Length: 347
Image (cartoon, rainbow, N blue to C red; front, side):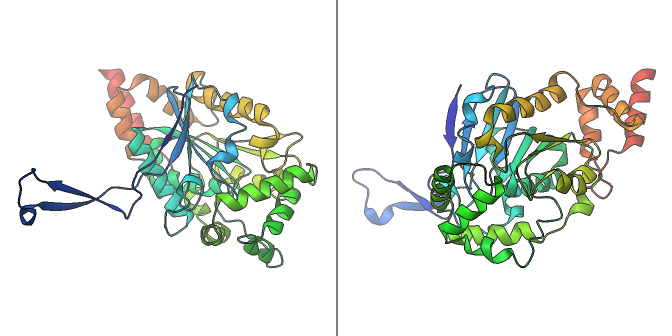
C-alpha cells in the first residue's frame, strides 16, 4: 500500500526569492523577484485506487489519529487523503481563521492539487461539519458522504454547563482525559485514555482548538443542506453517550433523503481506533456499493431517472446537467434531465 505525505513548502506567507545572475554580474544589476506559493493543506495519502476519498479529523487530533485504521484499508480500490486542518498535525504552525468553512475551502484546494475532480468525503466528529460544507460549495464534485460520530449541520449546541469543560480543554490535558473517557463510555483502559489525551495536546494548539470549537458549536446550515441527493452514511459507536443514534436520527438522517445509519458495537466516539477493522469493512462496503455495484436504494422516481440518465447520456451532457444542480433547492434540474434523455432516445 502506497503512503505519501503532501503539502507546500515553505508554508503560505513565506516567500521564495529568485535571482538572475552570473559570476561576473554587478550585484546592483541583480533582478530579485518574490513569489508567494499557494497554500496546499498537508495530507497523508494511503492507497492508489481509482476511488478518491478525502478524510477529515476531529477537534482533538490530526491525521495521525487515523493511523490504526490505515493497515485495514483497501489501497487497490481506494486512494485516501488524510488532511490536516490549519493548526493541527503537520499544519500546526499554519495560521488561519480556524473555522469549519475554512477547512471546507482547504479541502477543495487539496483536491485540486491532487488532480481529483470527484471524490468522496469522510469526516470524524468536528470533521463531519466541513465535509457537509464542501457539498454546499461544490456539490458536483462530491460522490458520497460519510460521517463518523459527526458534528451535524445545525451545530453541536453544547449546553452552557458543559461548555467550560470543552473550552478549557484547549490548554488542560486533564479536561481532555475526562472527555475521552466519557465519549468512549468509560470502557477503555485509563492508560489508553491518558496516552490519547497527551497525544491530543501535541496535535493541536490552544488557539486553533478554541477557534474550531466556537465554529462547530453554533452555526446552522441545515436548511441549505437538507434534501441533498447524494448517498450519505453516518456511523456511531454504541458506547458514545452524546453523538449517538438518537442524535443522528434527529439531524443527519433528516438532512439526507438517501441517508443510512450504522451503529458499531463495542465502540464509542473513536471507531477508527476502537474497532478499526469493523469500521473499514463498513465504510468501504458503502463506498464500493455506490460506485461498483449500484448499491444505492432507489427511493423515488427521480433517483431512478438519474441512474438511467447516467448510463445513457453522453458524459458531457450528463455533466452539464449535474453542474446545474440548483443550490437553493438542493436537487438536480429534473426537467433538463428528462429533456436530455428524450433527445437521446429520439436520436
